[in-house]
Image 1 (cartoon, rainbow, N blue to C red):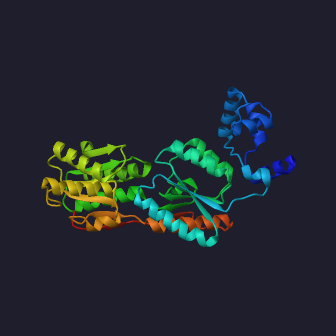
Image 2 (image 1 turned 90 degrees about the horizontal axis):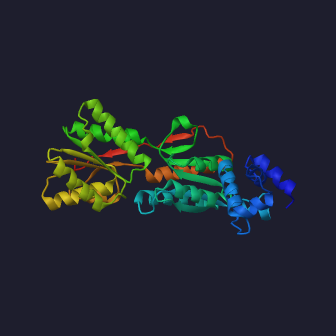
Image 3 (image 1 turned 120 degrees about the vertical axis):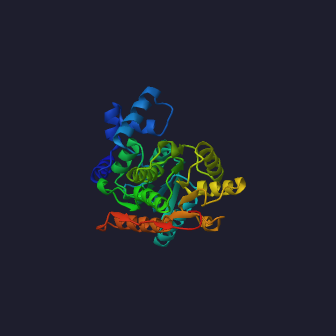
Length: 343
C-alpha cells in the first residue's frame, strides 16, 4: 500500500496519522511503528515518548490498514462495567438481537468499573476499526475521550442522559429516579430515611444525589444515614449494611438501596433477625430484577428499561453508521416505580 495513499486516507477521515505521532515524539515513522508494536529493538526511553505522543493525539494502531487502505471490520464494540450484573446481560441480549440480522458482530468488553481498564479495551478494539461503539455512561479518562473523538467511529452512550453534551445517548435520568424513590418513601409517611449504595459508579452517585436533594427539600435529610461503599454490590453486602445501619440508627424507618441485590440481602437479613418489613422499616430497591417480585415480602423497586435501552441504542448506532440524520440524539426511555409489599 503506497504511503501517500495511506496519508491521504488518514487525512480525509480526520484520524491522527503515524507520521503525526512520529513528528511529535521526534522519531522516524518506522521507529514510531516499531515502538507501538512493542518491538524490543526500540530503546525504552524512545518507546515511551512514542506512546505518550500517541496517547496525546488519540492515535490508534490500525493493523487492517497494512493490508487494505479501506479495510473495515463488520463489528460493533459494546463496553459494559459488569457481566455479573443481570441488567447489563439483558441490555447485551437486546443489542445482539438488533445487530445479528444486519450481519454485524458484537464485540463485548467488560471493564469491571475501572476507567483505566475501559481505556485499554477501547485502545485494543479501536485498532480493528469497528463500525460503531456502544458505551456505558459518561465517566471515562480524558485519554479515552480523545481516542473516541479521534477515531471518528459512530458512538452511542447508554444508561444515562447528558442533554448538554451534544452526544448521542439512550437512557433515563438517574437523578430523577433517586428523587422518585425519596418521594415514594416520604408519601408513605417515613421520616428517617437512609440511602445505601455500593460500587459507587457515576450512576449510583447520581441516584444518591437525587434522593438527597428530595430529602433536603422535605427538611428530613440526615448525612449519617447515607451509607456508601466502593465494595461490589451483592446480596451478602446488602444484609451486612442493613444490620450495620439498624444497629447505629435504630429509629430508621425507610431505606433506599442503590441496587436490588442489596435490597434483597436486607430483606433476607430482616427475616433472620425478626425485623418486620415494612412495619418497622420500609425497603425500596433499584432496577427491579426478575427475582425481586418473589421476595418475602415482595420487593418494591424502580424498574429500569434495560432491554429497551439496548435495542434503541443499537438502532441508533445503526442509523449513525448508515449516515442517516438523527433528529433525536438524546432518548429518554424513562423508568417505573413498582410498588409492592416491602414499602
